[in-house]
Image 1 (cartoon, helix red, strand yellow):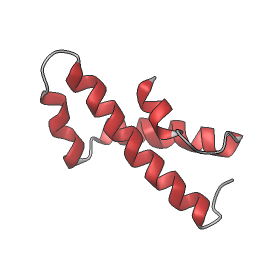
Image 2 (cartoon, one colour; image 1 turned 90 degrees about the vertical axis):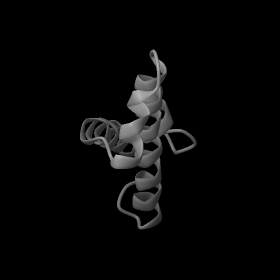
Image 3 (spheres, helix red, strand yellow; image 1 turned 120 degrees about the horizontal axis):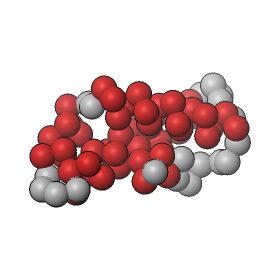
Length: 73
């Protein structure tokens, strides 16, 4: 949940943005980009949460680029 919230934080709440946020977050969470992959090694549940937040941040940045170039609204 926190990863999706991070993916759509401070973005317009339109169906396109919410759908893109969900899809991009899930994709990036599964792919595990190298900068965020090592976050899983944090102790306890912190690693799982930090990994999700990292994927959410990456998704948020991509969505901002899509909005800037007019690809989604």
